[in-house]
Length: 320
Image (cartoon, rainbow, N blue to C red; front, side):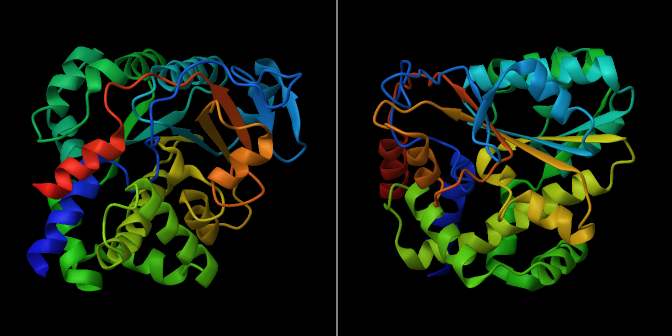
C-alpha cells in the first residue's frame, strides 16, 4: 500500500497538477461569453462583475502588499502578462520580491551560493537541482523582468522527494512552521470536500479516491509554504507566481495570509484560458467549484494548443 501511495504521490507532484492548474484538454481560439461579447484578452473585476482595462487594473493592484498571479503553467500568454505586471510594478515600487512556486527551498540555497546577473545564469543554477520545470521556455521572460527591476527572487515550494516523504510521515514530517499554520487555519468540511473534488478532477478521475485523499494535505502544505515565502519577505510588495489553484481566495494562499493578518492587503489575479464550450461567465465559476470566480480579478487569455491531452499523460503514468 505504501509503495502504491508513493507512486501516486510522485505522479501528482511531478505532473504539477495538485493545484488543478493544467487544463483537461487541448483548447484553442477565442470564446464568446455571450453572443455579443468576446472575452478573450479582457479583464473581469469579479467583485463588481464589470470588465476593466489594463490601466484601471494596474491602478487597483500595484499598491497591494500581496499580489498573487495565478497561471496555467504551460501557457506563454500568462507568463507574458506576469512579466508585464512586474514591469509596471518596477515603475512604481522600488521594493518588491517575487516568490515562485517553480523554485524550491533547495534551489533557493543554491541561489544564495552562486552569483548570477542574467536569466540564463539563473536558470543554470536552478537546473543544478533536479526539477521538472522548463524554465527557459516558460519563465525566462518573467525572470528577465524581475532581474531588470532588481527585485528579490524567492523560493516558494518543497521539492518532490520532500513532499512524498511528508505525505508518508504525515504531521510528523512537516516543517514546524508549516504545521502551525495548517493547525491555525483548518479547512471547512465544504472546502475540504471541494478540494478533494478538484484534485480528483485534475487527475481526470483516473486515480482511486484513497490515493487522492492524502493529496489534500499536500495541497494545503504547499499553500502554507507559499504563504510563508511571502510572509518572510521584508519587501513592501510581495508577489507570488504560482498555479491558479494556489492563488484562489477561498482556500488557497490568501486564506493562510489572512490567518496571519486579517487586514492584509491581498490581490489575487487568475489568468484563465478561454473555453469554447462556455457560454457565460457563470460557466467559469462552475469550473472553479462555485457560482463566483475565486479571484479578485480574472484575465481571460487565449488557450494554448497542447500536443497531448494531460489526461492521457496521467493514464500513461498510472499504468507504469
